[in-house]
Structures are given as C-alpha cells and as structure tokens.
Image 1 (cartoon, rainbow, N blue to C red):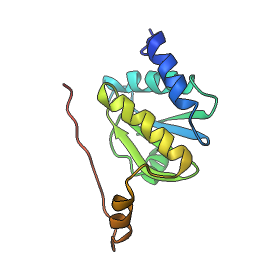
Image 2 (cartoon, rainbow, N blue to C red):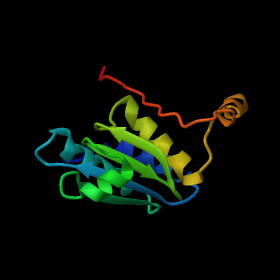
Image 3 (cartoon, helix red, strand yellow):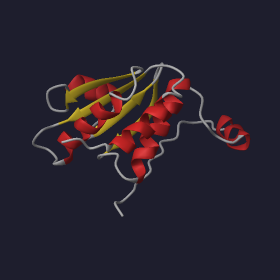
Length: 141
C-alpha cells in the first residue's frame, strides 16, 4: 500500500527536480521498536523513487550501533538527510503531515549545501562562538 498519492508523488517529483546535487536519506529503524518504523521506511523509499538523485540506506538501530553512533542517532524511527556532507539534519518520528514539506525542504538545502536563510540571520549565526544544538518538537494536529 502506497503512502504517497499520485498527486503527492507528482508534487514531490517537481520539488526534487530542483535538487542541486545528490542526497542520501539514511533511515534508522527497528521493527519491534515503533509502529512508525515500517511506515517511515516505506515513505522514504517512495520519496527516493521520485528522483534518481536520491539514495536510501536503511539500518537497524540495534544491529548497526556504530553507524547509529556516528550519526548521533539514539531513537527510532530516524531519518538523516545528507548532501555532499552531513549537515546535521535529522527527523525523529515519521515525517508526515506538516513535517513532510520540511523533509523535502531539508533535502533541497542539503543538496546545495546553502541554507535558505535571510542575510541578517546568516550574519547573526556567523557571530556564534560555540556550538549550538537546536531541536524542534512538533505534535500531530
């Protein structure tokens, strides 16, 4: 059973045509850990089918511990969005609903390596003197 409708798939293909370079979606899952793991794997595979510039790797959090540690992943489901390098873009939980557009946007940003931020925001970020860990929490509506 597909997650993306034909209309959704067409929209994703249009957006992913804007990818500046290849993107890899790395999924960490565990079949018994969460009911959303299987759905997350399926969603990511369907997104990847929309562009030949998107690759998918799927790992088991408990078996592939070294890989998970390298990405800083400790819970599932998790999706890492990588472009030319790892920019720290992570989704924990299934990126559906409003989060789906953030996944696609994250892929576009990772593909170019250039954040889509206002010049003022970039100036303030350049002024940071120590690392900052930002997390955004959402709840289903």
